[in-house]
Length: 209
Ligand SMILES: [Zn+2]
Image (cartoon, rainbow, N blue to C red; front, side):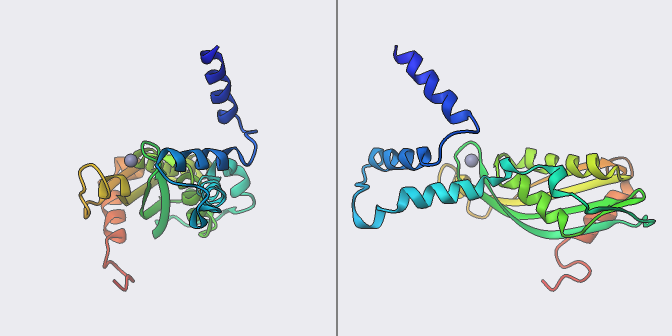
């Protein structure tokens, strides 16, 4: 009987239809488990706030690429590299539900099709506002651009700090984790890759830092 009940709870929480408020109750229970009194003044509204924050930070699950890029793809004869760099992002590591955050740099070599520049940070947001590991986040951004734009190539570099490393465990406060995903020409042509890496380097062209 205990097993049956557990399975039921798990299934309900996994489903898209989990009722708002379930999360709030879980936060209340978590506060109690942490030795807190959820009825004290400062915590009264905390479960509600945590639920709201978590739903915001994971809203990427409810977005999809086609909808996001709707009418933002257009034909253009432009065959130089397009780069959007220093895109701030915030994500949650799926191992600890703690934030990891930093900057993402995206470049691609168009093949007769480009995407509105403002859409690239939106793609980064969509994938980062989910439970993630940095490596997968990096690859998903690159593959999304590859799939929708069919460019000559795509490069994505993500630099991030992980609170799960900084606040606990190894406590390496200054460690920056860097991941990259190179597709097409960015993988096969060293010159393209080098140009991309040079252009995104901090202190590079046009960077005030
Ligand atoms: Zn973690």
